Length: 334
Image (cartoon, rainbow, N blue to C red):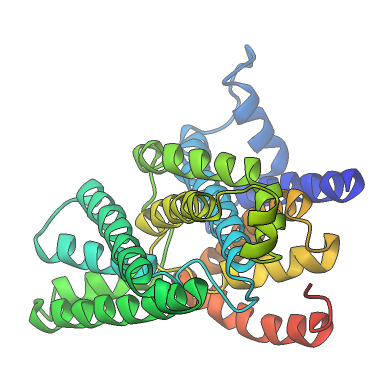
C-alpha cells in the first residue's frame, strides 16, 4: 500500500512538472521550479515576465483544476460503484451531470458570466440528485432500493437532458448555441483562480467525508442485512455517501463541463492495483484520477494547433482503455 502510494505520488509530481513545461509556449522544468520557488524564497528572477505569467497565471490554475476534478470524479465513481454494488456505475448515474448541464445551458442562454454559469450548474446538479433521491425514496419501498435509485437516476437524467436539448433548440444558433455546445464538451481552458475558490470547498469537503467513510462502504458492499446486523443505520449512511459524492461531482462538472469516463475507468484501474478495500481504494483512485486527467489535459492542449475539448479526448482514450480493463479485470470484482 505505502509503496503504491509512493510510486503514484512521485508519478503525479512528475506529471505536474511536465504539465507546467509543455504547451504552445514551452518552459523548461528548471525555470518552472525557479518561478514556483521564487514565491517562497528570495530568488531574483532571470526569466521573462511573460514566462511567469504563463506558469502562474495560466497553467497553475489549470493544473490545480485538473488535479481537483480528476480526483473528485475518480473517488465519486469508486464510491458509487461500491454503494450500488455495480462496476458499471459512474458519477453521473443519479443525474448530477445532466442537471449541471441544464444549469450551465440556462446560464449561457441568459447571458450570465463564468461565475453564474458555475453556480447555476452546481445548483441544478444538486437539484437533479435531490429529485432522484425523492423518486427513489418514494418508490424504493416497493422493491430493491438501490435498483430503484439507479432507475430513478436514469429517468431524471433523461428528463434533464431533454431540457438541455430544449434550451439548445431556442438558443441563438450563431452565438449562444456554440457556447453551450462547447461547454458540454468539457474543458479546463478558461479556469482561473476564482473558479478554484468556488469549487475547492465542496470538493475537498466531499472527498474528506468519503475517505472518512471508506470503512462504511466496505460494510455496505455486503448488503443492507449485514450492515444492519452490525448496528449501522444504512439509510443515513447511504444518504451521507450520496450527498458527499454528489457535492464533489457537481462542483467538478461546474468548472470543467462534462468529462466522461474518468469516474468509470479510474476506479477499475485502482481496484486492479489494490483490490476492493475502499480504505485503500479511494486514496489510490484519487491519485490515479488526478494524474489521468492531468495527462489527458496535457494531450488536449498540445497535440494539435487548436485545443481539443477535454471530454472528447477522455472518451477517445477511455473507451478502448475501458475495454482493456474489462478484459483484464473481469474476474477481479468482488
